[in-house]
Length: 399
Image (cartoon, rainbow, N blue to C red; front, side, top):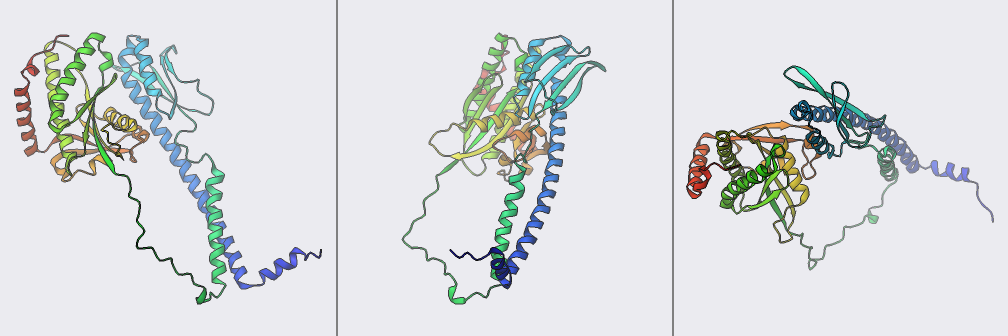
């Protein structure tokens, strides 16, 4: 069989302008794609390192603040609970709490490897250092460039193919008779309907220091909180669900366009009722409860039930965890559905822990601290009506 040598064939092909244009376009696209890829990789790695440092320092500082009392009293059980809860964040590899003389009081997670970033924060009480908190951030935390070859070469190859096609077409005179007409859509053809979706509005009531109470007292407190929450939430048909060792959750179905306003008013009203509960406990010389609230709106396919997705519930609880005491942390997805936001006193809050939210695309939330003057008076009148419905709400509970 007579086989023609390859080089003469290539030389003959490259002598044509359309192939010369295609080759030049391929080279230019490859060079541009590689330069952009390297620049992108460096910027992503820099942002990743900054995010890791921000998360590690914030987590260590928060854990140090929570560990003051149990570390002073050498309460290993409470320290272990705090370390275990913090280590549940996927970005954190291990948590260690030590005394000033390097005695390990609590440890959660595997032993930190050499390539793991370690962040340390002192546990201080009245100016004295009681110990240290060590937070190890996983090496693959916030990693978006694990397969660098795929990220860099795949766009370059796609750009090369597109450039080759464009260069070939530029060097070739296209015959107008060869133009391809778009297919005519059949008028009788129907488009499949998308499955209906429903928005679940979630209000998480977080008893931030519930774990510090004795077992029997904890049961009594939860019973009182459930009673008051049910009294407030039933006005809007909310469903109450208990969050083990955390608090309770109110679930609202999408009712109208101003549902966010109703949920936030419910949260503010509930905060006032729980403040009264704290006042009754103060009279009985009991530990003051710390309440935090989180509001989130999650959309999912309507399956006929009112049960929200577990990820959305976890995100609502995380929002409540970062809220300042007595305020409401509202996700961006929920707050963006609020018309006339001037009806509330709000401010933005950025917290690295919000990067762990799975049903929210933001690392910021909106803190709602109060209603505007006119609406605040209406909430006070509504609170008076609720007190009239439940006479026992003014009676101190026995712990």
